[in-house]
Image (cartoon, rainbow, N blue to C red; front, side, top):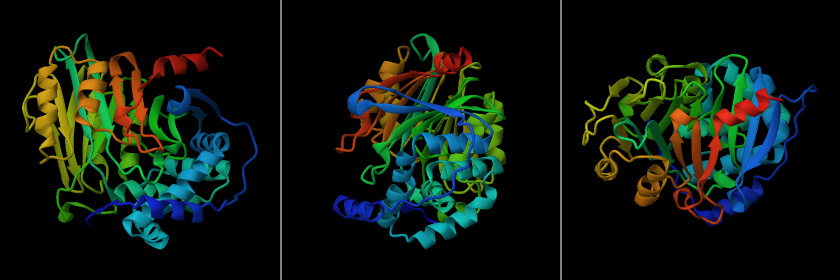
Length: 383
């Protein structure tokens, strides 16, 4: 199963988004909203911070209730533009989701139902948006460095998301901070209306990044757990690098994905190459590219020339890698992270995120907005 590359024509996208602006209403459940909404950043760099807590449905409902217009934009407008750009009908996307849905953990399906009810959209709309990542191509970059490789020994990690921006995914960026009844508190770096995860870090010092790849049609399927829920499962339910790797290994995987998982407490990280029936783990001594002590990295795929590019930059900065180096020298310097670019100081529980603009400016070239997960969690605990 070869995933389709999104090639969108902006003029046509505008037309489709206009046609997709139908407000679908659903019954909302009464009751207390288990969440709060604030913002960080200024002007065009402003990012919503959704703080959610409780059971899966309650968190989803709060998410939808707090930002209903933004949710509708993503799950009704954007998804139709992305489908149009990929040459897929809604019926085709529904059929693809039907193959994946049995493998999605029940807690996330409940959260998606809550999101639909809170925002006043259909559950089908929400499902369609969560089907898209596993049926579209995107190439990204990541690295993790620690110990002697970094300026202060901290675990520094990036997630540079290179993905189509013309569908307007970036219009409503969000940091969704979760305090689930079951699991570890964490932050999901994404967008209003997206329950799955492509970038995240938890309160136990586990951070995760990913890259799309294609290891061959014979290694790919849609009958498995979608990538955004594999990542969500790791960040919500693991407290160590070993646990995190095991979660990915045991997951019924779909397409070809490369992962970077960092563990701040262990001051260690691994790069994973995965597909339906592929699972390889790399440490700094087994990395198939230029080897640097206490560093793992990959960029644009396993066989891409970008691996040499990022390796060379990391080698030049070896011993002084810090969040600023990650943001400026790596992501902005190489030009990776057009949809969003994220630098983590996992040891300190901090991140910096830059998002693409609706004017076509790439994320890596815009202002990086700081956020501290620890401070956010402490602020609610102190109320």
